[in-house]
Length: 265
Ligand SMILES: O=c1ccn([C@@H]2O[C@H](COP(=O)(O)O)[C@@H](O)[C@H]2O)c(=O)[nH]1
Image (cartoon, rainbow, N blue to C red; front, side, top):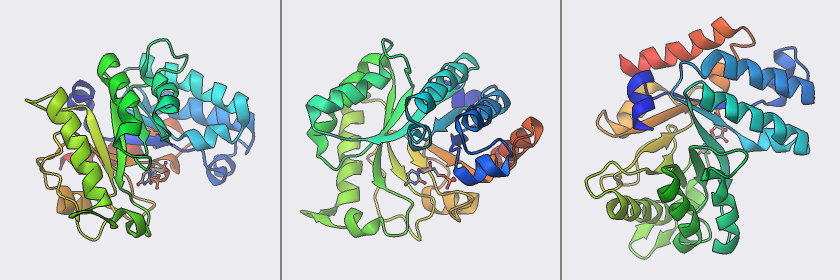
């Protein structure tokens, strides 16, 4: 991820074909609209943005043919030099997790560079994904302190001395310390840019922070700086705020470029 970010800046753009966007773009809320929307985003942004983050839910909504659209998009994104972070938020008992982890492997028809995963079933449940990331050179982003307003209901619950969110961060920190003792590691956490205050200690993480919640959810670049400072490896991710500029390719690029410029100012 580091090479691509060094060349293109840290921005990740989410590919979230919401019903409202498909209608707003005039492509239609159907399979053809899904393909036109996805192709247009890939064509406009995969050559300039470091990371594209397709949201699995919007493709599964159209069944196997929707997933086929995503499969083509993933190949197109990688061919254009951007990384694919598949936002699927998978998490299951280890034996099933091994199959989800296959997304990171070169044998998978939709191999991606990184995957979002849910830690709800416990740290050991994610072990197959950790192994797959290590052997493929891919990455994981584990949900820790998410951007939705009621996330603290579970994530602030206590596990011994620390919050659930902190326990997740500490677990991911241990993976990085084992795998990349001189850092930075390829295991990251999701921490929303919408937080009023940073209520997890990220000092021992040793890996990247995926920060959603910018734009449509109210988060700003000033919030990123307030929460994370300027030294941490943050991957800020924006979906609707960029996508709403489409379908014109130049307008999509301009919207992404505005975020990139603000992030580097
Ligand atoms: O805590 C989280 C984890 C993931 N997301 C995902 O990011 C995008 C945000 O979309 P916007 O349009 O920029 O609000 C979306 O795919 C979410 O599923 C998140 O928002 N918060």
